Every structure is written in C-alpha cells, then in structure tokens.
Amino acid sequence: MDTARASLLEKKVEILGELAGLEELPGDRGEISFGKRVGEGTAMAVDRLSQVAVHDKLQVTLADIDRALAKLDEGTYGTCDVCGEPIPEGRLEALPWATRCVKDAARH
Ligand SMILES: [Zn+2]
Image: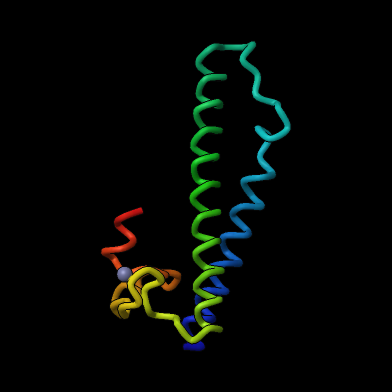
C-alpha cells in the first residue's frame, strides 16, 4: 500500500499547488471591471465562476485524499466507507483516493 500512499501524497501536492494558483488570480482582489466593454467584463465574470467551480471540486478531491490517507492508517484502505465491501482494484488505480465503491459513490 506504500504505492497508494505515494500517489495520494503526490496528488495532494499537485492539488494544493493548483489551489494556490487559483487563489492568486486577480479576480480575488476585486479587479474585475465592468466599465470598459460589456462583453469583456462578462467574460471575466464567467471565467471567475468557472474558477470557483474548479476550486470547489479541488477542495472535494482534497478531502477525499485526506480520507483515503486516514484509511491507509486505519488499515481500511481499499474498502468502501459505506458498505465495507472491497473497492475494485481498477477503480483504485484510476482513482487512488476513492473511499466508496461505485454504487455508493453514485448516490452522492
Ligand atoms: Zn459501498
């Protein structure tokens, strides 16, 4: 399971880097101007909205990674948090931070 821990930590560092990058964007400092051309300001506002969505998604993944790391410590890594069934290896390979089986993940 050391491989799983390494890839989780690697992914965590990557996400923290992306989050830091998003937070440095000028939109956070209230520099969006709607004054010049209407289209320009609107496009920037839309960009900002999609950045917020990306930010939220990264936060969710980060929480999953932390949960998966905790499961490694508990010795329950690779089993579903909801039903306790083993998570298929293919799913863990594609999504090392998966903490629920496909069936239970789909319910959320
Ligand atoms: Zn399950």
